[in-house]
Length: 146
Image (cartoon, rainbow, N blue to C red; front, side, top):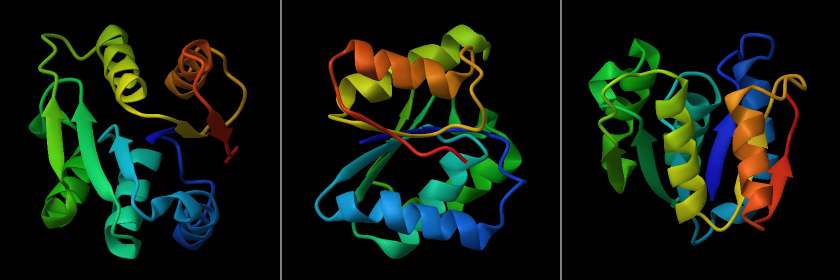
């Protein structure tokens, strides 16, 4: 499963996100493999929750390298390193929107389903682009607005 979501998560508490992840990621976690983007926000929060609350396999996918990610995201990867099965660094030369879109497509292409946590209905957001790419691939998607 690919996980995509907003980077802006300050409008909810950590406990609320834990409840959302338990309700929407938890039912899929037994025997699952999750692909997570390695950014701040939903990526880091879901990584921490999955690593601490499930035995699911986790792959982190970043557009460049892990050390180019925001500090909070890099810290989440460091804290959960023992639970991460694989880290994929796509090594984009520039960390601009095309690199992030390529990362998101890579995750969807390797997953059987996408679970998205969008904040708002902005169609140009990376979350919605990823969810729409998933639909275009004929794969199921679960949308959990936050």
